[in-house]
Length: 593
Image (cartoon, rainbow, N blue to C red; front, top):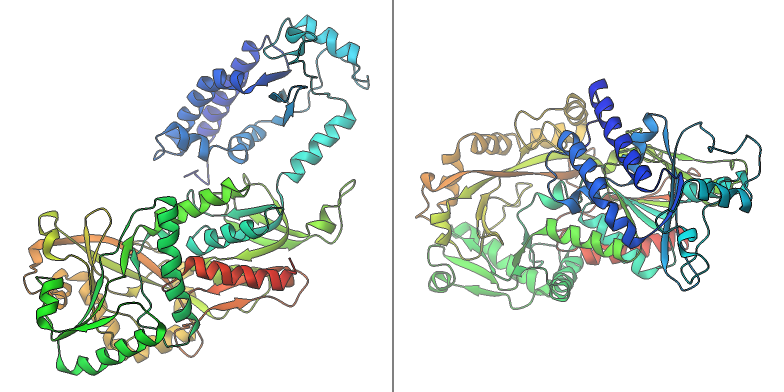
């Protein structure tokens, strides 16, 4: 991840590497300042490009290893902006075709503020001048002088003021879009994929504040494909989950994404849980969940030999999957259809252009301006914006003038990890019967696609919106949460439950004791501390969990151009493709696409 603050030593080394690279290219191309290259020529020079990037990556991106990752993470907005800091300028790049349709790339480097060598200020760039300068520098790779009048002949880039203005306009248009989606989680990328499939003629982009997609909730979860049992019949959550389950499996089959339909047992171990279990079965059947059935103790043993219970609901179509992998595949599909993904773009503000700059209609056609906290990220202009900000959805909404409520409160879930030699204790998902008195589901057994088994999680207040450990702390985030009356009311209502959850997080044996109700052969020595995740829980001011989708638009000129997905409640991952269709419908209606 790119460091937000660089020392002078880092600047010096980074600039030295980049200038070294540009000098090598110029020398290889016979010291020309403007040249033409075929794709094959670019491939020959990639060694020097990659060598410089690897040196920089060891300083700024230590986790990046492969060449492809380097190229993915070192796009123009990063590398070229480094050069801008040291008064070197990327003039532009143009993909052209010659008479036979052969693609060629033309590029130009020069120190900022320096004029072209060999041409006095104010002199027109004539064809004769172009040829004479070319002959002074000798033959150039891919240069038309080498090709003569043959079929691969191609003109050089003109550097006259008129053409330079056109190049500036092209660079300016590079970051203009018809629609921008803020948030590179599973809902944001699924929405982007759906919108670009419906409207391939539009320019779309996704802005993600981390260095990769699915960096938080989408990549830090148990990985369950839910069937839709728990939700109120007829509710939007129930309909989207049942539909999303089918769409997810169909999508994964089409794109060869691995998953496992390992099934799920919701087990009643106490007699007072049986009426609630019967109610769940009826609810799931009303929702249209396929092949649900109630099983007794013997059938429980057939499905899960190490599990005990009085009765259980068996859901054979519940599965497991890597939702982070799915999110990244959504992003790749989006890019393959012409979309653009910006990483390390932490949105700091939304603005509105009221007037266009000189010789530009940008303010009229793309009035929404999106700026990042990092000065090294480009300024994005767009006609419309959709935010799917997850843990920061309320703050993104505030930036465009919307109501700060419902407020997002982060809750951390801490998992235990079953030791590999004990991974055969469970075959599929084992869940408790949910207690309606408490806001969260309870601990459960979840096998993973990599063969590991996760146990848990508990649910405790996180001290930071992306705080995955007890010592990850943000004064702003914690003060924001504690000052909200909705959280204080929730904490007062469930004080005993909250203390118990904290106790289970500190003492592993306490959590294992609850898990032993379902698998008595589990022992504390069979588990170790595992991964954690943070859930974005939306709360209203009365301390109630917001359990439905919330879409929001402001009333100002800016607000009417920004649609916020304020809350996409669990199971958002399972329902992601169905949610994307719903969000796309809202976008088309709101913005008249």
